[in-house]
Amino acid sequence: MSSANTPIRVVLWRHGQTDWNVENRFQGHSDIPLNKVGEYQVVEAAKVLAALRPDRIISSDLIRAQKTAAALADLTNIKVEINPGIRETNGGLWEGRTATENRASHGDLFAKWYEGGDEPAGVTGERRSDVAKRAVAVIEKETDNFSGTVVFVTHGGTVRSVLGSILKLPIPQWGIIGGLSNACWSVLELTKHHTGSKWYLAEHNAGSLPEPVFGDDAVN
Image (cartoon, rainbow, N blue to C red; front, side, top):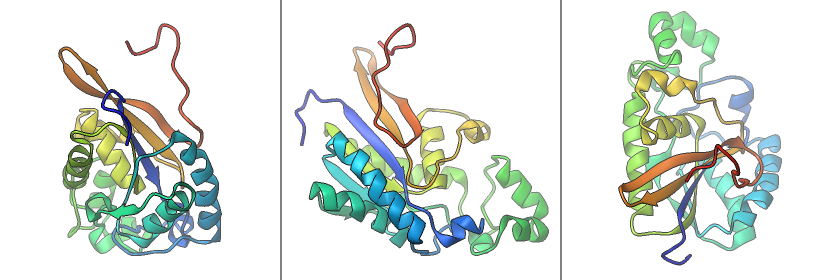
């Protein structure tokens, strides 16, 4: 683990591609494995992420996330910790169905949810606020009294909910945060000032290492 003076960096890494991703099927809690493309993606991405010298790797319990995490663990010799609190949104009745099918069966609800509303996904599933609450709780707990870099291997919907919540955006505006491509990541860093601590978004939907920000836009 890094020294106490090292800032906290959180990497939110989305799993590699699955067949359901390609077919535009709502995955949610369905335990869908990586496809061949996904297996290749995570191996290549892990080579880049290993250069960040992560201190811990924490993965969703779903197999697509665990297999993604394993690629980085193989390079870093870090044991993967499993936490179901960062799994994907429970999609209720929408899981396994395409967007077209879900629009046909639940037109108004799907439209409101798709546009960023906080309705329960698939009638019986989770709200975005529910996902944010459980996932942010995991991140806060695992970074408390910690310094260094933690890679959370998770899911696209979960990442968007985490970012919207931790950056204190109103829920209707969470949709302005672009999605994550398969095997790409976002990076949050915690800055500490005399007035307190604050998270900021250092990278989003990245496939390369964060670069320092110089010039007038630099965070002081």
